[in-house]
Length: 334
Image (cartoon, rainbow, N blue to C red; front, side, top):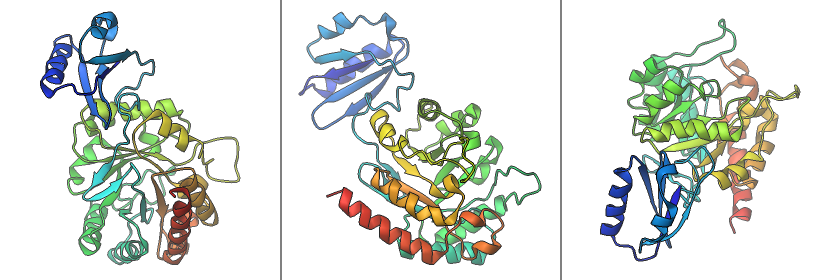
């Protein structure tokens, strides 16, 4: 349920109303926009008499929300959420490139790539330290050492770092990580999501490979229900019958998600396609359909990469993608 307040409602009136709702076992999500203040009510609202609410002087209208996700719902929060990552903003018109290697391999590799992607225009550095791999014989990442190398690259470039957590017990390594990524395989790891909800740092939540948009938003809801509202959604391709690409990039989800939620939406064309030559056209398409950012794998020597070299761009190729994406964005934001 949402209660839309009349223009001019005082802070004291709002406080008293929130207290009244709280005494009835409801959590209140307060959203102040330019023209309206909205109270999103979370909990068992069946006991609330809408006629009684409509009789209050400060309430303009009351609406029941049928969708199961509440905090992530745009009806609760009409204004776009802007996630601030150490001064680097994403969402609400703020666009970011998130770039770096699939896996952190060496000090030289991660620092060279970090410097190049920053020069090209990336706002955040991605790199895997803990790697979920389909085969147990594949490179599993440098783990704690990988986090340390990411921190060194951050110290050299100033780029905030984005890296994936696979298990609750790994969180002890993530104190200095700026954005914690939840991979597609962990999108419905609800115990992990609950733990991330207790934290005060941004979470990049990837869509599961066979998940609906509502399931993605319900996973975001797990994080937000714990008090952490700094969630960035990521479309990284879904599994279909098509085998020509690694996954099928569902770009229709970007405008749909912007209607459904106030959270920023980024696109990962690298994992979606699995083919380096497809990354650029899909990145351009992602920008054209309104994505808030693009996440791209960049490696200084893709042919010898320990992980996902086939989908990784060289730094020079990334330079070209950034230039072309920025040209697209100039057109669509006029």
